[in-house]
Image (cartoon, rainbow, N blue to C red; front, side, top):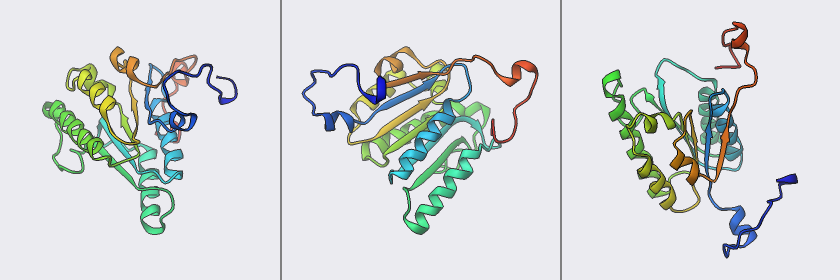
Length: 204
Protein backbone atom coordinates (compact mmCIF):
# COMPACT_ATOMS: atom_id res chain seq x y z
CA UNK A 1 0.00 0.00 0.00
CA UNK A 2 2.60 2.62 -1.12
CA UNK A 3 1.85 6.23 -0.15
CA UNK A 4 -1.58 5.24 1.17
CA UNK A 5 -2.80 4.03 -2.22
CA UNK A 6 -4.77 0.74 -2.38
CA UNK A 7 -3.18 -2.04 -4.38
CA UNK A 8 -6.52 -2.93 -6.02
CA UNK A 9 -9.94 -1.35 -6.47
CA UNK A 10 -12.78 -3.82 -5.84
CA UNK A 11 -15.78 -4.05 -8.13
CA UNK A 12 -18.24 -3.35 -5.30
CA UNK A 13 -20.30 -0.56 -6.85
CA UNK A 14 -19.09 1.98 -4.30
CA UNK A 15 -17.59 5.36 -5.11
CA UNK A 16 -14.14 6.27 -3.82
CA UNK A 17 -15.74 8.54 -1.22
CA UNK A 18 -18.16 5.83 -0.06
CA UNK A 19 -15.37 3.30 0.23
CA UNK A 20 -13.13 5.74 2.10
CA UNK A 21 -15.85 6.55 4.65
CA UNK A 22 -16.92 2.95 5.25
CA UNK A 23 -16.88 2.15 9.00
CA UNK A 24 -14.11 -0.27 9.97
CA UNK A 25 -13.68 -3.18 12.32
CA UNK A 26 -10.08 -3.22 13.53
CA UNK A 27 -8.34 -5.94 15.53
CA UNK A 28 -5.03 -5.53 17.37
CA UNK A 29 -3.79 -8.94 18.47
CA UNK A 30 -0.55 -10.86 19.05
CA UNK A 31 1.74 -11.59 22.02
CA UNK A 32 3.62 -8.29 22.17
CA UNK A 33 2.74 -5.08 24.03
CA UNK A 34 1.31 -2.16 22.08
CA UNK A 35 -2.16 -3.45 21.18
CA UNK A 36 -4.07 -1.15 23.52
CA UNK A 37 -1.56 1.65 23.03
CA UNK A 38 -2.26 1.65 19.29
CA UNK A 39 -6.02 1.58 19.86
CA UNK A 40 -5.88 4.53 22.24
CA UNK A 41 -3.72 6.45 19.77
CA UNK A 42 -6.39 5.88 17.15
CA UNK A 43 -8.93 7.16 19.64
CA UNK A 44 -7.02 10.42 19.94
CA UNK A 45 -7.31 10.92 16.19
CA UNK A 46 -11.04 10.29 16.38
CA UNK A 47 -11.44 12.69 19.32
CA UNK A 48 -9.70 15.39 17.28
CA UNK A 49 -12.29 14.82 14.53
CA UNK A 50 -15.08 15.45 17.02
CA UNK A 51 -16.05 11.80 17.28
CA UNK A 52 -17.88 10.37 20.26
CA UNK A 53 -15.45 7.88 21.83
CA UNK A 54 -16.47 4.99 24.11
CA UNK A 55 -13.88 2.77 25.80
CA UNK A 56 -14.90 -0.55 27.33
CA UNK A 57 -12.10 -2.28 29.24
CA UNK A 58 -12.59 -5.98 29.82
CA UNK A 59 -10.49 -8.02 32.29
CA UNK A 60 -8.50 -5.18 33.94
CA UNK A 61 -9.18 -4.80 37.65
CA UNK A 62 -10.53 -1.69 39.32
CA UNK A 63 -7.13 -1.13 40.94
CA UNK A 64 -5.24 -0.91 37.63
CA UNK A 65 -5.04 2.65 36.36
CA UNK A 66 -3.60 3.14 32.89
CA UNK A 67 -2.34 6.57 31.89
CA UNK A 68 -4.70 6.70 28.94
CA UNK A 69 -7.70 6.55 31.25
CA UNK A 70 -6.77 9.80 33.00
CA UNK A 71 -5.91 11.47 29.68
CA UNK A 72 -9.14 10.41 28.00
CA UNK A 73 -11.24 11.57 30.94
CA UNK A 74 -9.45 14.92 30.84
CA UNK A 75 -10.25 15.19 27.12
CA UNK A 76 -13.87 14.37 27.87
CA UNK A 77 -13.96 17.13 30.47
CA UNK A 78 -12.35 19.53 28.00
CA UNK A 79 -15.03 18.77 25.43
CA UNK A 80 -17.80 19.24 28.00
CA UNK A 81 -16.41 22.65 29.00
CA UNK A 82 -15.32 24.05 25.65
CA UNK A 83 -16.80 21.93 22.85
CA UNK A 84 -13.32 21.07 21.57
CA UNK A 85 -12.93 17.52 20.27
CA UNK A 86 -15.62 14.97 21.04
CA UNK A 87 -17.32 13.39 24.06
CA UNK A 88 -15.53 10.54 25.82
CA UNK A 89 -16.81 7.70 27.99
CA UNK A 90 -14.59 5.19 29.83
CA UNK A 91 -16.08 2.01 31.31
CA UNK A 92 -14.17 -0.71 33.16
CA UNK A 93 -15.48 -4.18 33.92
CA UNK A 94 -13.31 -4.41 37.05
CA UNK A 95 -15.26 -1.50 38.52
CA UNK A 96 -18.56 -3.27 37.81
CA UNK A 97 -19.36 -1.11 34.75
CA UNK A 98 -20.40 2.50 35.28
CA UNK A 99 -24.06 1.92 34.32
CA UNK A 100 -24.61 -0.93 36.79
CA UNK A 101 -22.23 -0.08 39.66
CA UNK A 102 -21.96 -3.73 40.67
CA UNK A 103 -18.63 -4.61 42.20
CA UNK A 104 -17.15 -7.47 40.20
CA UNK A 105 -15.68 -10.59 41.79
CA UNK A 106 -13.79 -13.53 40.37
CA UNK A 107 -17.00 -15.59 40.45
CA UNK A 108 -19.09 -13.23 38.35
CA UNK A 109 -16.55 -12.03 35.77
CA UNK A 110 -18.25 -14.02 33.03
CA UNK A 111 -21.63 -12.47 33.84
CA UNK A 112 -20.05 -9.02 34.02
CA UNK A 113 -18.45 -9.50 30.61
CA UNK A 114 -21.80 -10.56 29.17
CA UNK A 115 -23.45 -7.49 30.70
CA UNK A 116 -20.82 -5.32 29.04
CA UNK A 117 -21.42 -6.92 25.67
CA UNK A 118 -25.19 -6.47 26.00
CA UNK A 119 -24.66 -2.76 26.66
CA UNK A 120 -22.30 -2.44 23.70
CA UNK A 121 -24.88 -4.14 21.46
CA UNK A 122 -27.52 -1.71 22.69
CA UNK A 123 -25.32 1.27 21.89
CA UNK A 124 -24.40 -0.07 18.46
CA UNK A 125 -28.08 -0.49 17.62
CA UNK A 126 -28.72 3.08 18.78
CA UNK A 127 -25.67 4.44 16.91
CA UNK A 128 -24.47 6.01 20.17
CA UNK A 129 -20.77 6.50 19.30
CA UNK A 130 -18.43 6.98 16.38
CA UNK A 131 -15.60 4.86 17.81
CA UNK A 132 -15.75 1.95 20.24
CA UNK A 133 -12.51 0.72 21.79
CA UNK A 134 -13.15 -2.77 23.20
CA UNK A 135 -9.95 -3.28 25.14
CA UNK A 136 -8.94 -6.88 25.93
CA UNK A 137 -12.20 -8.05 24.38
CA UNK A 138 -10.58 -11.10 22.76
CA UNK A 139 -10.27 -12.79 26.16
CA UNK A 140 -14.00 -13.11 27.04
CA UNK A 141 -14.46 -14.65 23.59
CA UNK A 142 -11.49 -16.98 24.05
CA UNK A 143 -12.78 -18.12 27.46
CA UNK A 144 -16.27 -18.80 26.10
CA UNK A 145 -17.96 -16.04 28.08
CA UNK A 146 -19.16 -14.27 24.94
CA UNK A 147 -20.13 -15.89 21.62
CA UNK A 148 -17.74 -15.06 18.79
CA UNK A 149 -20.53 -15.70 16.28
CA UNK A 150 -22.74 -13.17 18.07
CA UNK A 151 -19.95 -10.59 18.06
CA UNK A 152 -19.26 -11.02 14.34
CA UNK A 153 -22.97 -10.95 13.44
CA UNK A 154 -23.56 -7.84 15.55
CA UNK A 155 -20.63 -6.00 14.03
CA UNK A 156 -21.62 -7.02 10.50
CA UNK A 157 -25.17 -5.74 10.98
CA UNK A 158 -24.38 -2.55 12.91
CA UNK A 159 -25.98 0.56 11.36
CA UNK A 160 -24.49 3.93 10.53
CA UNK A 161 -20.85 4.97 10.69
CA UNK A 162 -19.50 3.26 13.80
CA UNK A 163 -15.88 2.16 13.95
CA UNK A 164 -14.90 -0.64 16.34
CA UNK A 165 -11.42 -1.52 17.61
CA UNK A 166 -10.86 -4.79 19.49
CA UNK A 167 -7.63 -5.58 21.32
CA UNK A 168 -6.16 -8.65 23.00
CA UNK A 169 -4.13 -11.76 22.34
CA UNK A 170 -5.36 -14.83 20.48
CA UNK A 171 -8.09 -13.19 18.41
CA UNK A 172 -10.52 -15.81 17.15
CA UNK A 173 -10.15 -16.79 13.50
CA UNK A 174 -13.76 -15.87 12.70
CA UNK A 175 -13.20 -12.35 14.04
CA UNK A 176 -9.93 -12.02 12.11
CA UNK A 177 -11.62 -13.18 8.91
CA UNK A 178 -14.42 -10.63 9.32
CA UNK A 179 -12.32 -7.63 10.38
CA UNK A 180 -11.24 -4.99 7.87
CA UNK A 181 -7.86 -4.30 9.47
CA UNK A 182 -5.90 -6.77 11.57
CA UNK A 183 -2.51 -6.01 13.10
CA UNK A 184 -0.47 -8.63 14.95
CA UNK A 185 2.05 -7.34 17.48
CA UNK A 186 5.08 -9.65 17.51
CA UNK A 187 8.08 -9.39 19.78
CA UNK A 188 11.56 -8.70 18.46
CA UNK A 189 13.05 -7.47 21.74
CA UNK A 190 11.68 -6.39 25.12
CA UNK A 191 13.43 -4.91 28.19
CA UNK A 192 11.90 -7.66 30.34
CA UNK A 193 14.09 -10.15 28.45
CA UNK A 194 17.00 -8.50 30.27
CA UNK A 195 15.24 -8.62 33.63
CA UNK A 196 13.91 -5.06 33.55
CA UNK A 197 10.47 -4.53 35.03
CA UNK A 198 7.79 -2.24 33.58
CA UNK A 199 8.17 1.46 34.16
CA UNK A 200 5.99 4.51 34.53
CA UNK A 201 5.11 6.22 31.26
CA UNK A 202 5.93 3.09 29.25
CA UNK A 203 3.66 0.37 30.64
CA UNK A 204 1.17 2.58 32.51
